[in-house]
Length: 516
Image (cartoon, rainbow, N blue to C red; front, side):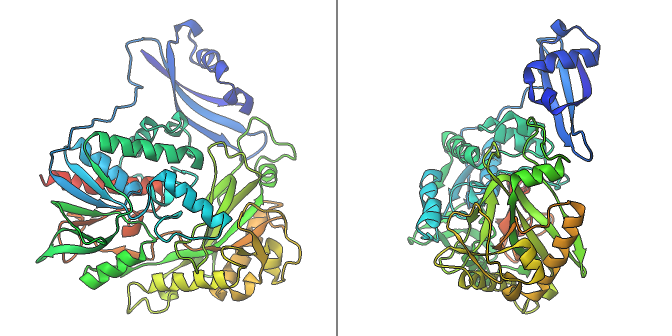
């Protein structure tokens, strides 16, 4: 037998797990000794006003034989001799497509241009310490994709497009924290996610799947209007019953190859802006309505949005207790991104602050579906030229940016390659900078203390989503005019973030399995 209870707790009560059973029993009106186990169903912070409260829902079990709360195990099949499907890319879409194929009795062969997680760690460190960019192994390319060294945020609004719970369970089964199963805004953390990716790799290999690292796809193998496989940079050819393209939003060469081959592509809008970094303590004070926030509360987050001249300006990928990293894939361009460790215990809080760009805002979009990619590259080159040596990033105080003043004195920051004072208000396109300026002042009115020169604007945040969508049929999910080629995830233009990309990979894999 089970009971479900809803509670409103103080931060201290929520932090002290040893008190849970007693609190739950009192709320349910049952004897504490009758509770043999419990499951937290949901947990969220209510910080709309002081004092801050924690909302929690829990299920209490009084029968040892009641196993309703147990996570469904991964149902691996031996696919070592099964029909094969090629998956290009080992990011969330590719990895979760592979897991799904294994459950369906199909062998995945993953082709990944980058390196394994352990080798990637050395390469991404070299970007910060030596300003050396390996264009095949960086924050975007390699095992786990762009998400591997991110905060591992698992929150998504795409609830109509797949089983979110199952995605979270698979992360949990591969080493993620149990909290991701019930937190309102679950995250894994950059320090934990890398090992989770390694564990997923092992599951795929143990089931008989294959993963080829440092292996780049350069072309498709076609027979009429059917894709039979892929050609590799080393001259080899791989053939399979179907091919999944899960290459991420930064694989410019893949889009160019598809355009050359005749695959139908569509240009799409995306968002461009900056990384904004505050002291985490300041964000805590603002969000928790106190100069001395409760020590039992986690680092505070925020989510901001403002319509400015018919375009959205919004916070993106907010990283409490995190740091800013160089996320370019090309040595003469500059891109920044943010991430956090699992404890989110860093001194700074950062967030992307980006402006919506529609198709009409991007030069040449009507004639060329790759125009967004080219415009994105131009902006990233501009950021590089206005930075310092290598990956030293252009930066400006938040108030100075709004008031169009060059910053003479800038606060400490988390960006390890270093920053240089730059008039970002001058060289950013006016349709981006002017909207950011209006939004920053508005955000300061919503969050008193947010608009300050203690915050830094660092450029450029430009890899928010793909500027290209690979057309696919709504029913078959195949490209046009070719069949047996299935775009998936962020690079296909049908997802944004780890969970929605994973769900899209699962959806494509299920479609392929149904055709057996």
